[in-house]
Image 1 (cartoon, rainbow, N blue to C red):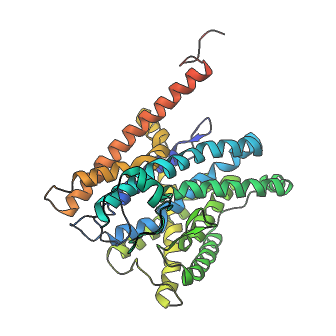
Image 2 (image 1 turned 120 degrees about the horizontal axis):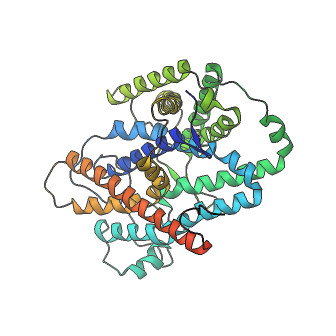
Image 3 (image 1 turned 30 degrees about the vertical axis):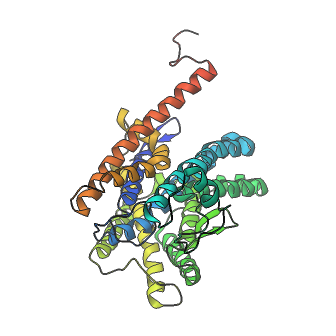
Length: 398
């Protein structure tokens, strides 16, 4: 089954992106209820075991996002050239980063400060200057998760996309003759290449996790919010996305490979949910950390390849609703966290189980995020048409 295209849009990747975005919303909806002991903007008294859900998600879904994002990069660069390409990357990715860093994230962190820290309440402006940016000095018995409170939060993904785009641009400028020469030479995707890739990424992951276990976040170069434990996967699958475009791997992926990796991925997911594989692994040279680094990498590759094949074969279509959802997915990723936190606070006084709250916040969060995302995208299109003084629909007369 070939890849259907509309212009340069590929239906099944758009639909896969919509599903992944909904999964991200569900993942964050479960943070206060899943007893993960990680930082979140709201703390729930009711909890349930969402460890397998979190573990499987963390193993693959952001790597698959990097794969899909990178797939469209070469065509964009080839068409626009380095100058326009970088300018549009900064506009598309830099704008939500600035909005999140200076407006959205401070509001979330202030809400957490006044509800879940034991310090006397302060006005938002005082918090913004003295605590968020840290200009007032670190308070005694600071509870973290870091000092000061400033961060990119879930927007770290967008920050990394911008960094990777800059690195890609530098590489293309420096080695443009090699890129153009190799563009016409396509390499077949084989089982041996995939296995070798997994062993390479798994080995790098093991080495890095000796010093940086899962969920250890640092400010690389002071500004790049990074969890080094997953960087080999993210960077590796970003590179794989570029190679997939150049070699047309999305089109040529055989049913044998696609079905095989999908089944393998489902088996490994089942092992996770059965409790035979643990998500929490210590750092250092331990055998558990060694084994999980390779297990997670093979799980990631299996689900990425398997889901790409599944959506190519069975979700390679579009329609009005799917088009709306696809065009809103990026905006949903940006805005969904404050929406979820709002619902989590709204359910705080509802006397029911953590499972019911998790499901309710997930469903409401997905619906409201996509509705608001679509409204935002629609408003932007209207403003752009007015700015360019173009009619909303193409004229029939020339």
